[in-house]
Image 1: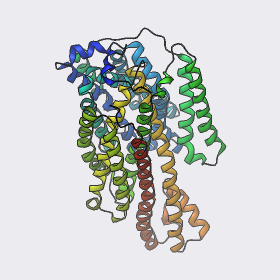
Image 2: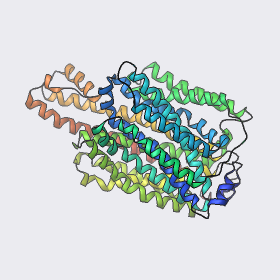
Image 3: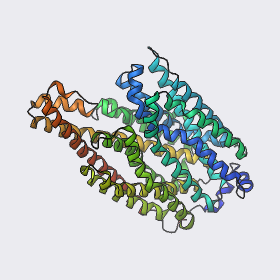
Image 4: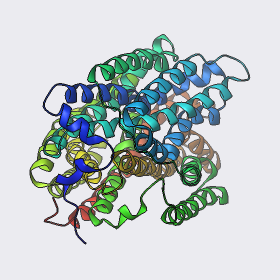
Length: 523
């Protein structure tokens, strides 16, 4: 198969040529990058900030535990289900227009989430606007990436996207810290903080004078519905697996049903004159490998924020703010490595940074896991940085190389594909690794309770509840034994987290094997 030459990318019929030729020599391309960073910062921070405030939201709005989970899950579900549509909208209606629409929609829905009233309608209100917030993010992110890609020529694109992914990735770690501080004031602040950020993003976007580009094509509504249903069913299956159980027909009905719908979507797209996604792009071997690498990396990268934060609080005794600082260590490795990866991509192509990055990340996660029982950041930080550096090396090059191979598809459309792959992988990683955590933790806590003299049946029931949200041990244990159990929980949670982090290392090791299959001479 003949490999597309990236030097022809600016001639894709998206209108991107105008932006490259008019802005690449001046400050407008850099303003465009800054504007898009402010825009997507809201979505990346939101991935972690709401989870920190979830207990306060549940308590003050009197939500059920399931309702509280859906405050988090609704946003992720909408993102995953509509990314492909968002990418296509960016191409047909223009990335500038979709960025502005996405920013505005995200700000409005954030304000409405923060204005959730008390009472019986609270759950319906906040979940509905979280869904709309996720859709706004799905419209914004592909358009923002399309603007950045079009603003920089191929020879500068790797470094530009290294900045984009490095900064936006670092912002993900801001979520736990900001969530902890804002929740001390009011949980509503985690949503209202998006409004001034959105206003600033709109102002800088206007100053960047991004050209208005469009493709006079129709949007495939049938394809959009199919991919939304397929992605939505699968993601719901992953999200509810721990509640329904992995042996439940409902779990597998959603997951497999979603996969079947996605296969039908692929067949329909091949027969559609103006499809939502150019399915034939998957005949490009390098594009497929890029997406496999992204998929396997995201199985570890997004879930690590959740599981590392839990470990820091349960085993190290940190509060939410300290747990956020613990995660910042990851980005002390991620941010500089992202810059190195971008330069390697511009100079030699995507193969080297993907191979080196996946190998470094796999080793980093494995060594990090091996140190979890030392209960000290001092013993762990070199390996946390190593894991972050590995992800930083590969993330930008894999994403940028996939976009460079857009062929007759366009930047927004291909970005929609890669973002869909990343979110699908993150949902799978959270589901599978979450099951590993609860299973190992339940077994270990059961053994600890039996050692403390609790009858086996009661020990199993208490451990089951504790592994899924906590339990008051004072009702079944004496104060002395309860104190011993507290230490056992820290130890057992570290053991369960160790299994999770080794799982992440395995995903990155498979990622390394996939990266090795990338053609040597493909630039």
